[in-house]
Image 1 (cartoon, one colour):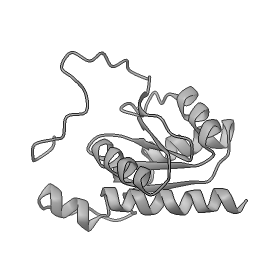
Image 2 (cartoon, rainbow, N blue to C red):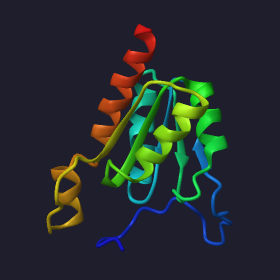
Image 3 (cartoon, rainbow, N blue to C red):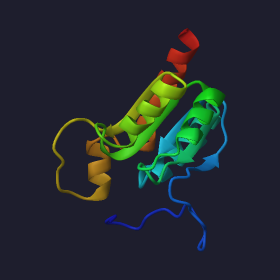
Image 4 (cartoon, rainbow, N blue to C red):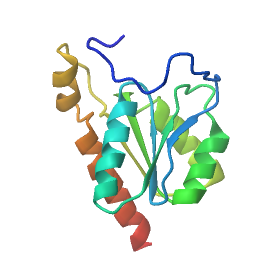
Length: 153
């Protein structure tokens, strides 16, 4: 559970289907697959990147198992670049699941914003997000880097 007031992404009564990702924002240059508190950060990053000339889709992968492979592969084909944003370890979570889908269905340059392979700490949510790089600014950096890799191909 979050420790502070969370940003609202969905209206009351929204119908979410287990195993089906939800596209919150369309884009053409890259896609950010996000979950949990990182969803709001991804939306903020996409808005900022739009002002910088990049079109970024944001997809809520609120269930990792089962992951919506169809949505992951479709967005990889549409954008050619993917970033995963999750507030967990980069190994064994959403990033790993997305990489498996991409490897089998549509290999594209990919990166993540997640906790690097290290133990967590105790602290406020704001402190922990900054400490582990779980912010919109870090998502922006990864999107720019992954789009540059895509264009260099």
